[in-house]
Length: 404
Image (tube, rainbow, N blue to C red; front, side, top):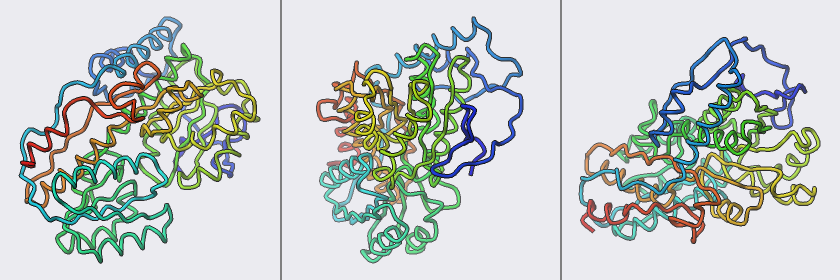
């Protein structure tokens, strides 16, 4: 387990239901420079560097840190900029069959990407065959085997880790079947050591940083934070680490705990975990940061039953922007923000990337800018359908590329 998963409240660190001995830490404090925050505010793509300093933030710097976080958040909630994706590509020949292997169709983000891919397949006159792994190792093996038996022209691995599934994916590449992923690794682009030619995702570090900055901004730099992650996935661990770094850089914030909860077990575990966190941290717990909205789906009832006021605990997700998250944000029921990915657009993109690979062309490498949804913009750009669907004309753009 990564060293950075730990409890900062003074109690023994908690990982899921296990307790770990306290890891040693250097005295070097992680801070985010004000210049980097200025870059964040100027560029929706954000900066990448986390600077290290032996000195804690002084009072003036701490105030500036919060101010810049608020500016970053305000910029990230603006309307989606004009289309900045691919402008050329091959036409889509009809009749292709695509295997779409999903990690777990109980995950709202995965469902939305699958819906986008199916929408695109209709336009392309392709057939999309969905195989659900049901969030288990056995289900994953069966889904991969069934997908291979379907003899597809291409495969999308949606929500599963490419490294973990590399042996199964290699069987596809040996048959000359191109592989594209969605949230299959920690970064967008090809996944080294695997056949995945393009992993479609937002920049996970930027997504996580933005979610954490939202907590800093909301609390005026006094957030008491619990982070929820899933150690089975590299993308989840990368997000958790990025969120932790931001919260630790906030002088008045407190990282109470990082809790490891398998996404596939969220429905069973989160009600009890929510009660445990309330008992352990009480009013110090003001913000929950999660790598996915699904954790909050199953925590709300426990919070309500415990009598927690909806405005006393802020839930913020670093992805994906599920329909239930939009409902909670619009209703102002605990969840205040989500760094929503353009899931339907990403469904179109995975199909476009496969089309390029089938045609023997390189992938586009397109990555959408990061976007924060809160109560002020949750009804815009697809919000009436409880999703973030960018108003940048992507459907018409892809139709033109595919000559459809």
